[in-house]
Image (tube, rainbow, N blue to C red; front, side, top):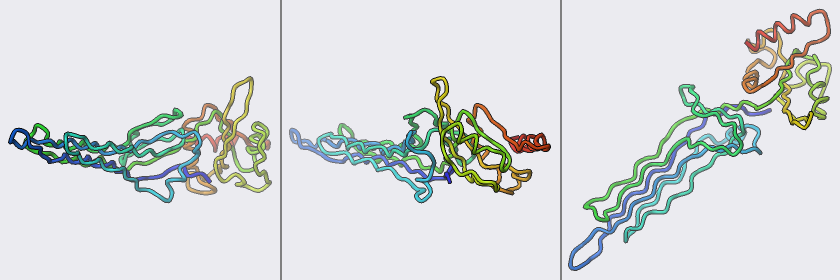
Length: 250
């Protein structure tokens, strides 16, 4: 079963404080403190080797490192490394209000989700020092939508998985009882030197939107689908099956 949604709390690092130090020069005390460094950011990165949000199931709070304090002789504090969190391609980032912040689809793409705090200033050529500012802190929702070219959708025992296996060369379980497919499965096949991704979706029934069967929340993965292939049993009620599926999609 894939994990396609997670809510996580992110906290960027605090900026480092400025340094308060002096040197003696010609009988005078002169400020020599360096600036602090900025706090570390938290960066989301698309990783092609991750296929769901399972890594966020157990750990939901992430904090980046604080910036370092400035040093004597006008030396700045060392900038800490940003915290990088990998997500699968196709992850939508939402804020707490449900608004889309970023749609991460390009492999290797990155997005700075929270920024580290600004650094404090040392007393080099100043009369006082300043302190680092707090980093950004927020809750975000990760909403994974599987990228695919063809999604196969149908009623129970309508041959969805058989078609999926025939296209992709896979051997997923096929039985004559309903709900053999209990989670979205995907694989690739090649045709005319072009690679396509096929998605086999769980079965729908008439009252799926009411939570019957396996529900219909998995239909959100149609968000990125180019073509929906609808299957039905080759009986007299196939038109009724298609009508039910259309209503569920709507």
